[in-house]
Length: 242
Image (cartoon, rainbow, N blue to C red):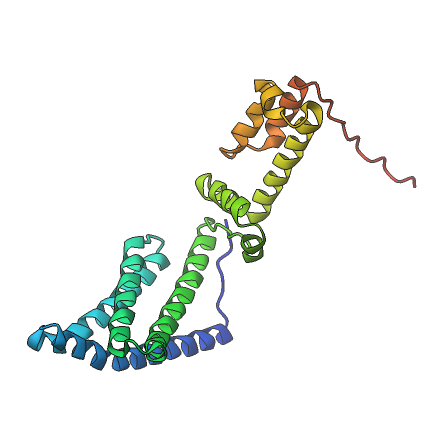
């Protein structure tokens, strides 16, 4: 069972600073967007409802994000809350941007504060989710950003396999991928470029099973034997002489 993370006094101080800063950002953003969204609502014929329409959107974003954080903390997340909050935030940015259109600088200025607020909340959600998942021993590591940048397509296949078969350790997934590449290299060395057609079915089966999360370490020996490839047996190192 994973150890529960203990928060020190410094952690609590930093959390207080972050929460205070997020509230200030939210207050500034909501105050700044109220006038722009209200004017847009008046132009669109909302009448008296235009005075409460911006408050309803901003309050909805706060409630949805707060509820998402709460449910994530108690480990019963509901993704629709987060996605709806994102949609409302995008709508708020669009409404504010429409007030400054077609001035690109004005549109960007209207978008800065909502983006800061969303990033702050997402960081908090990530931290809460990480703590909750580690406590429940269910944390799933992510793929490194550098790998996404250097090799996007193979990385997507790696990430897809990781998510589909609940492989939680990034190092474990890398090891499985290395085993798969080594196994393919052995078949290619034995049968040439057309190894996928020439290799027997028994030799290809370990690769197919690896797509479903079955480690090649369990199936490779039989597959290589069916292909007539001898696997060297590593002998244990001799103990040092006394």
